[in-house]
Length: 349
Picture 1 (tube, helix red, strand yellow):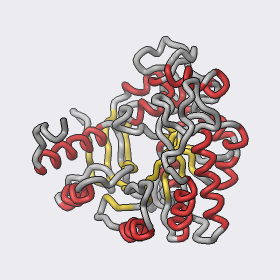
Picture 2: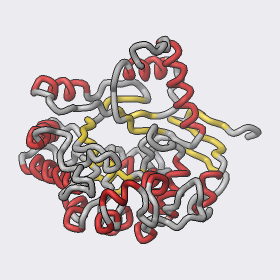
Picture 3: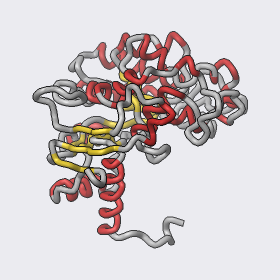
């Protein structure tokens, strides 16, 4: 289909990108972590930035796929730091597994269909070696790891990498962490690995009664430890929250709400999935502000309102700490600024 479908021109793609980013600014976002650098996306970011049309501060992590050799790793390291005023390459994205829903996650035990038994990397030790090389080069990593075996292997790899030297300040993180046992969960704080969670995945793609595909594949025991945001926070881990757009909607107030109520956004009358894992409004807000700044190693000049910090600001029409979670997605965003420049202003303001 892609071979015969009409392809947009570069100018059309540039405008579509600008429109998507403008919509994100209007939702209150001042920045984002871009989990790929595919095609000519870096050139598009550069063009928008040079024209003063980039409304978000973007941190880009290109992919490292299985089969990447030493030269490929060196290329990824050399790419670090490329950027402009509001975007830069910082970090590398890797995948340790697929998804539970389609049987491609990596689990300690097979799912009910006998699937999700293998890593995305045919040789997981090759992944471990690359994590070590990137760590020693001072490059942060973000690894997609959904199943318990995948998360465990990422943590093992980071632990080995830290033991080989390198800058201890380099911050690695795991994306998704949909189901993990206690002994794996405790290691996030011990190793200083960031836990990157997407509450709306739990809210909108699973059900409290475990009749959804995700839960039925896992069985009651593993489905009962879904998206353990509360346990990770209580263990001392840094938990950051995101949307995983375009898999789920990007508006941050919806993500904030989901972390607090854990109910389907389309029907808030439904019971929450794992209410014991809900975060407080303050914890959720930290997950969207100070947490991401820490994950990026930018907490000294980003993530909070403080003298000398960046003027990346969002003005809301209501207090997100006292507004009922169910009402948060509808709170108007009055103003968004990035580096002191207004990127969104509500009508009439």
